[in-house]
Length: 385
Image (cartoon, rainbow, N blue to C red):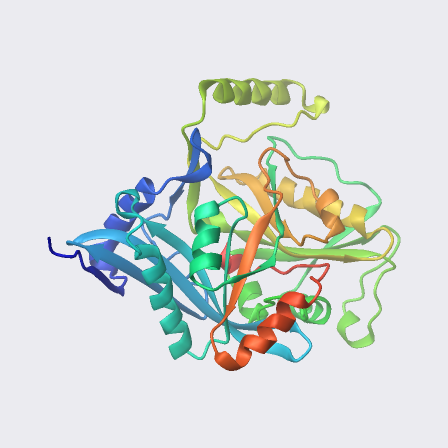
């Protein structure tokens, strides 16, 4: 019997777009057999990577059938190691293999081919993110491909209610211009893992809805803070990215009892909003979401200020009929996870970031990176969500 040969090549929009959409539907991803999440890329499979400085999508074919796909991006970013402040990093995402063709080394072949692209483009480190409980993915990258575990951040998801929520009168909120936001982020978060060197491009992107700061009422925000360093006694900052203009999500295979439970809670929340019932959003039809990034705070009252900013973003989302949830990601040591509104049912307590050196002379640096205590704050590039 002849050995089946896998063919790998770059994505071709004309012939691959519809085939990738069908593959995505076959590769249902989710927390259980009863629930899965379907991603609608709105007819553009590269939508999640096209805003990055460099990107590539590879497809795998077997007997003229598209059986696998992977995406990668390259950027210059901070690496949290004393001897290495900036590095070229490659991010791996969107690995999918047809369920009928697994255990044929298609996934590992796709990853290794993408790594060759990284090496050809002078990448120092490759990294990826997956669910800590995704056993197949964790084993592939750590046992077979040489990646090591780096961070275990938490993904926090908050459902959008159907009416605005109250923001404390003790909180003042102001929108920053792009230059102010860039300067503040470089100053306060520039040393965190994977902080992007092109933060200005992110803030200028049309998907970035803006950056806001919060501070105590009675104090002021000096527009010239970047030159004289005059900050309020406490303050907080975050930015918002509208993923709904890139792709939609939809939850499928949920049980009838869950559907009924959701409808009942939504009805009660509409009739009795003062009860503040924790509801599940309508995620059974295509929906978008806001992603809060660059969340940071300083000062004694800063936790309450972060909470106020999150409520502000929630109230923004109520005006967008497409936005059903608000998401963010925080570090494992970040105390903010207790002050950012989120649903414990929808959130994921531990994500997993893994990293690998692409150059032999960076392996010692990699050892120092994984031994360096994780920073309190975390900057997640919204282009990689």
